[in-house]
Length: 114
Image (cartoon, rainbow, N blue to C red; front, top):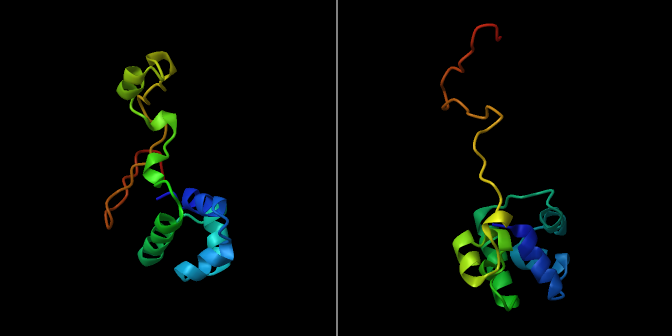
């Protein structure tokens, strides 16, 4: 969930971070961290309360607010709001090795690595 977006929408409605914090049961500093992006995770219950607060106070659901890049290319072509040339190229291969071994498994060390 994009907490930053939910909090920005609540702020647009004139709700302060202090008010949000009181409503969802956290400190204002937690709300500030979420709003700035410095914090990105919440306990499930707190997240549900924030979503509920947003749903009660914001007229348009967040699901309807998506950037044009999130709209499938076929939909953009059908509505004339984009073309294949403007679509981003898919990533073909990763340049980093970010595969992690399963929990408890011995990491593989190749020759010359230690």
